Image (cartoon, rainbow, N blue to C red; front, side, top):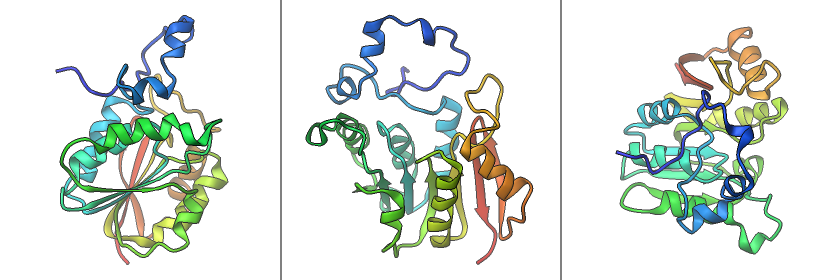
Length: 218
């Protein structure tokens, strides 16, 4: 069955040779209108990994939403009685009232039955200031500068319950992948979890560019 999402394909060789119609179709306007599938910034393997680790979770937070493809994965796998919090300022639109990225994401994530979805249209550091709810699963996929990834970690990890999962996107090198040693998430994971003292956290899974860590104790 054809997926409703267009996944990133690290083996594709024709990305740079697309003509202008194909490039124009990448604008989120066409996802909002349903003329194309939402474009994911993750691979199919990463999509399945997100679903696996989010399965049954009741309080899920995603930082960095884009067109909503990862939100679709999380909402489809988590406890339907739970709540999915989607944090993104959607600030890059030239015309804020016509923010097609936000509209495309709402179209992708909001359809059909499932967990309650709460949209938090704010920068992650602002959203974290008054955060009170416990978190079962946290996806950090916002600003990719190393200091921004570290700030997201420092701002949000305190709310993750024992046994909870934090996933970092674009955080490791993988065959044919798009990441490099200079990527902020890669540098953060290397310094925080591979070289530094990460207790009470440990890496529990790695799939393509995704790294999953779990809190082993409070």
